[in-house]
Length: 446
Image (cartoon, rainbow, N blue to C red; front, side, top):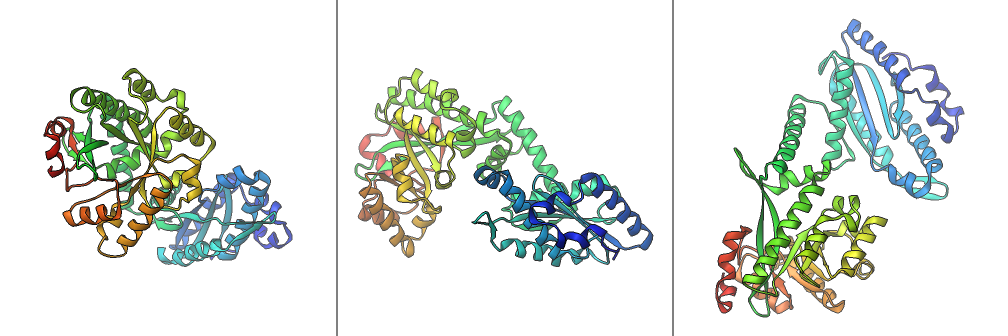
């Protein structure tokens, strides 16, 4: 391996706060990378480029200030030096991104141990200004000349690998590969297709009934989007919704869904049931990116004359735990406007009683995994959730109900509503109407 650059030998004389400022910048790092590539070509060895990006570092700057953030970066730099003491160069490329050059390796897997060590070192807490902080990292690795002989592409490859880690949960590492390259380009194609889908009205709102266990009647609907692709058919929301959130497309798509659902509810109320209600899912991205007064479907709600309790928005537990000023404001304004709030997939996150009170929650939706396990520990969990919710004056909806036995047990537990294939799968509006025109005494047997 090439000799370490001189500044690495001086780090023990530099303070944590100052260390990050002494690291080579992007320009110097590029020079070192070119030297390492030349050495690899002449020696017939491999050279690795590792890109290391700290996960959610922005929250440190936001909560404790940039001075604390700089100190944390210095502490991270020291740990990186410890994990890769023989590296050709370790640099801070900007923000919270670091890069490491490893030369004279015989096979790509030689970087695996270093990556594991970095992740393990970063697991230990950092003491900054009397506060304990935790950080993790996403690491992408590309190999020269195996992956490419072009240094610009080498950077792109490592960057793609690093972001693949972030998209799959962070706190790990990944090598660039052709399969990864193909997956990323497939993702980009889908994003382009999503934009086209919105322009060409390829989305359709499906509805799933929510049934009252007291009456057996359909009293609510949940609006669920489906992408009807012209050549691929129906594309699952599990595939495209995460992409819409990553790209911000969830905002225009989500507003379109809500507008469609509200207009449909207004029609159904006039024709079938004036007390019917509608649930609409809202992404955290939507609540963070728009002010209440700028949300288009709020105006649609007013124009359609739908008043208190007609609409329920469904949000996740994590949104409450990591709520921001705009989110808090939007939820408060919605509640004041008579829009009810439900926590979707309740029990899978970490919300507390304090959060349920603070945000004026109206309903809890029991996650389907608990309903599936009603013959086991799920029974105890559902018992506790229903009792807690009722003690707070909240309604309870159980998701994923598929059998009469599950329905019977939920009735015994005092659950208020159920939703699932026992009654109906999500259907287009025209097919849902067949359920709404059934005599009321037959609704429970749908």
